Image 1 (cartoon, rainbow, N blue to C red):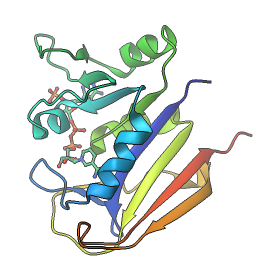
Image 2 (spheres, helix red, strand yellow; image 1 turned 180 degrees about the vertical axis):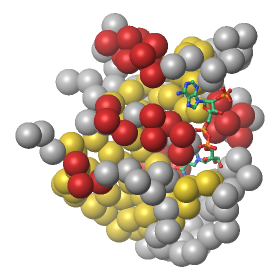
Image 3 (tube, rainbow, N blue to C red; image 1 turned 90 degrees about the vertical axis):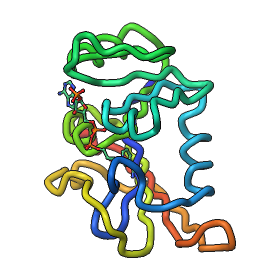
Amino acid sequence: MKKIIGIWAQDKNGLIGSKGILPWHLPSEMKHFKSSTMGAAIISGRKTFEGMNKRVLPGRVNLVLTRDLNYQSDNVIVVHDREEVLNWFGKQDKSLYVTGGAELFRLFEHDFDELLRTVVEGDFEGDTWFPKDFDLSKFEMLSSQMYEADEKNSHAFEIQNFHKVRN
Ligand SMILES: NC(=O)c1ccc[n+]([C@@H]2O[C@H](COP(=O)([O-])OP(=O)(O)OC[C@H]3O[C@@H](n4cnc5c(N)ncnc54)[C@H](OP(=O)(O)O)[C@@H]3O)[C@@H](O)[C@H]2O)c1
């Protein structure tokens, strides 16, 4: 069954971004992002999209959220508010991964069925944090996997999978 899934990487303080890009370079974490999202739909905020130089990720339906009604970019579906995103989601059969940034995690907080959180071990400098008031108590962690630092990945990290608790 299709789902709406939040996927992000943060340090232990919740930092997710620095000057429009990620604060770290962790190829194994990027591999996890790629394999998780492949074949599905992904949505990012306009700032995150531009931080990636408007790169369209292959093998996935790419959506970008902006309030700018004139915004255009090749090979992406431009959407303008939460309702439009949920309408789009309802009319097709793919799961939707919300890939950030902070504004989108806040906007879709109550729509998530699942979360895939990576916690990077370390303190980094940056300017964007995962929403501090996000209510994680509505979710339960079903699994987690630790990845140690190695010659390619400068820091250890843990990938955690949460599911929404249904009342
Ligand atoms: N570590 C991670 O996993 C991760 C993941 C993603 C991003 N990031 C980082 O996060 C930072 C960017 O995050 P951010 O929070 O500043 O920006 P963002 O969420 O990427 O984008 C914000 C933009 O999205 C649009 N938007 C937001 N809410 C909207 C709404 N309700 N309706 C319509 N459009 C809406 C607006 O675009 P307009 O201004 O065009 O209207 C807004 O300026 C970057 O540093 C990036 O690298 C980290």
